[in-house]
Image (tube, rainbow, N blue to C red):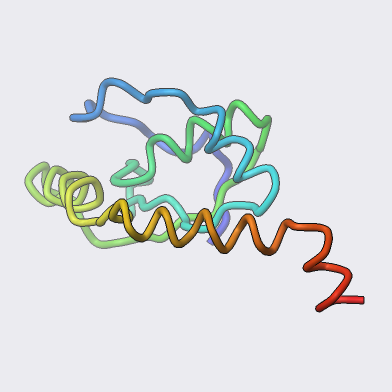
Length: 116
């Protein structure tokens, strides 16, 4: 469901350092929002603080949201923690494989041979 960004309420969060939002803004500008932010029925933000802030930087008026039933402070805190601790970054080997594939796909000869 899409919701006006101004309607989303932000309470105290564990994350205080948003870091550099430039890459996230570039990604959202190019591909859109890949993962909706998560709110509860009272429109309190539970997960996706950086995505929400990047949307604001981009001048978006609305953002796609998932709504979950989490009204207690404990549930809200657990969801924020889960969102930020359970994902897994690429390993160094996976990053190397990714870089190799990107380099190959971006090479002009590859596009001529396989696409045209």
